[in-house]
Image 1: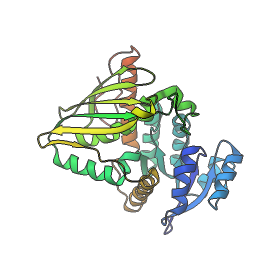
Image 2 (image 1 turned 135 degrees about the vertical axis):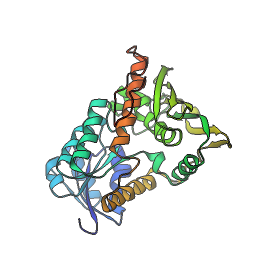
Image 3 (image 1 turned 30 degrees about the horizontal axis):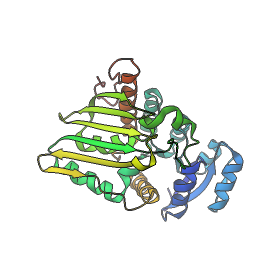
Image 4 (image 1 turned 45 degrees about the horizontal axis):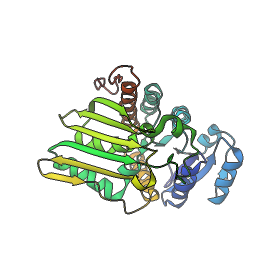
Length: 313
């Protein structure tokens, strides 16, 4: 590998335009190689705006890169991630890695077989203030319960969100779009989820309840249909030292994404894994799939074995 990591971008949607492409173009440790998208004209426009070039096929982009950043719907991401890993390319994935356990496991296994580095971008997990808070809370320990509210208004009647046109978000709802964010904070502090159930609320609102490996219990309410006046994010932990709440974000997602790129660079250069790798992305998918199964009447928490861990029950 050269002194900079050659990274290509797969995807041209609002998230790619707002966060991925600008951060890749500005990062001093990255050579932003080019863009591939399902709409060639969009790929050409995004590439031109950042001084790089569009590619006709994903494989053409693989050939000119060391790593791929992916900003595509989960079902599209999973297949391309497997193909990129099989080509020996490191991966900067978006959450969720996939919306089925089978697809997420295929990604994790492809990464392991190829021996490539992987990072899954969870915005809150890589935020400066949020990341420091998670580290302090995990080190302190002694937490017996927690609650998270992750309430968005993407599909509310008064929404002006650029993501309101996202077909996969409309189909899968808050459980799969913002549920990963809540899990990315709860799991590293309270431990792996051993049991999960979910209850539907109005719109796409879902209430999750989890039992964690260390005995703690947590809950999370997620929604993309909350009125704008009620939207917001809060996470509070309760334990032997009292209570602590997630600090309010002081910067935009671009800063968090730059830190995710930093993590990928460190993983590539140091050869060490990262807590937010494809295997963690698989576990998040397993938990969400079990939650989805519980409110679809398919049994309470029918998770699948992953990474040596017990199924969710």
